[in-house]
Length: 478
Image (cartoon, rainbow, N blue to C red):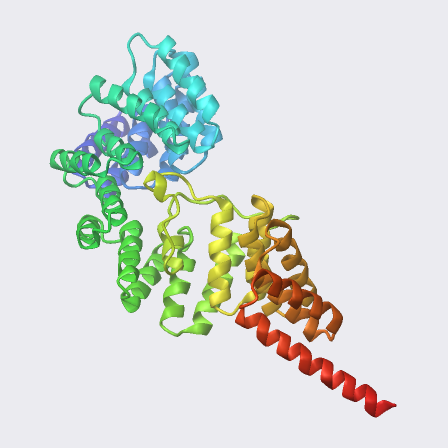
């Protein structure tokens, strides 16, 4: 009996600590209670909530799974465990748990909404939309959380008009739901209404001034509008609330790059790498900053490390999926327009775009062999095009792969028969290989396209000198 009273005392004290935000003490008290009565499901559930509040989702999931063992017919632990699975990117397991919760309680909106989220994050948008319609039939009243979840799926597919309608419905049904106005602002920005988006962000921040996600989104829109000082202010506000926020540090690094403050950019990107070595594409931005500061060897090592991570281990060396973060890759290249600028940057980066931009940076770092591999991947991901083939030819020529450079240049001419640069490269390659007749043919072809091209005229002189040397050598040998 004494143990039972002691366990209850620990559980009550844990609740008090939880309400005061003292997670470690709440956890300690709950573990003491559970050690005395390990089959008390409520305490395991509260431990899961406490660990979740402390940002320890994997451990929270273990607690929720224990609750499911003790109360297999209760839907709430299933939903809580599924949500933890979503946070740790175990989406398939989360979907299983949500389906079990729906089977027990078909009118449970949270299970449908989080299942839609899991499906969307797996890229199964058709099934996510089907789940939304099933939810609308199953629920007694329209579910605002389901509208908000399916809107994210629509945003990922760039179906902004439908996404905006769903967000407005969610806002009508539950005006106080967090982040609805911020997501609607993102849709407005994507559809060419930046001023309305700014107003929406400001309204959302008036209601919730400390919302980190909204501050980050607002800052990104300000970057797109070229209002860098205001954007930096938003990111610094994020760091006041959460000093180790890697997204804010990375955005500040991008802003520093845009104004040519390479040392500051270097420091920000290096900090991001230390805080989160898996931050998407961060080594590209750090490599660019190092390159601009003249640290060539450090930049090369950084880019090689990124390339090792970038390529999957496997037969095809296919590039891994791309994060929605576009700032590292934008920062990695000088004078490049933002990827996804036409949609406010909401859409994901395409694999071929990142491969090409990564390849460009590798060329700048004098790593042509690696650059050629990235350009070849870009072609494999999407299709051949003259601009990428030109880059591939340059990379192969610079890496002394003469045959590869010639082959790529010939492929360019299939797309653009009047490409003087490719004709010039083919003539130069033939001249270097001592194929004077072939070189003469390419020079003549190029001059028919542009008889004033200085490069071809110099090659014509080099060809004439080479021909004269060959003729004189032949004469002396007679």
